[in-house]
Length: 211
Image 1 (cartoon, rainbow, N blue to C red):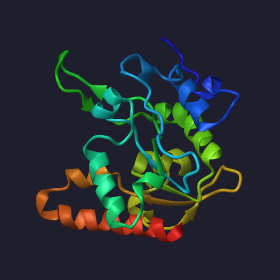
Image 2: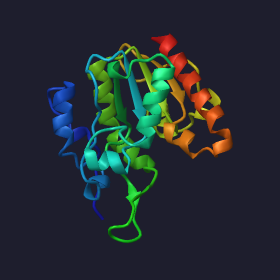
Image 3: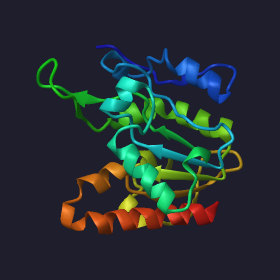
Image 4: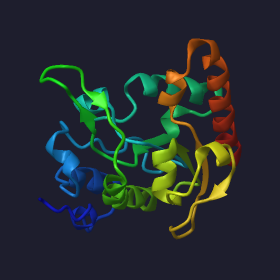
């Protein structure tokens, strides 16, 4: 059985976002690189006051090599606009940089599979390095995987969503606001989706106010 030691050994000496992105392409810190098409690193201005962190890339993100370009990304873009946040000023990334999926037959649709705790921990050095390089004022955590990657496994988005918190474990820690992942809004039944979307936008308005 192959043992993976995490991403720490793959971090470059130069900790700029550009250098981190280039180095991440060769990361073998966990087993996800073997099946994924490519590393999907964060994207946006490296001077962003707001960083949004999701779970991991999906099928389309894995193919294109960019975060939040699929259906969840479309909903996120719309919600940011409705919350009064300029999408072009935001840096978006994920807690895990490779796509994890199941596939019953070759050539069939690849189905998202939640990353394991060990995979989240293995990838955490990339996320911490991104935050250290950017030094945002606020971090928005989209979903349980993102929130627990930085606050620990006891953190519950359902209990703490929309609260303004201080992010632990960083020098000059930014504020943090946890909410649901946009994919969770898309999964809500049609009859309740407008309410779920409004609640998501309300959380993003808290993010905007914290800025």
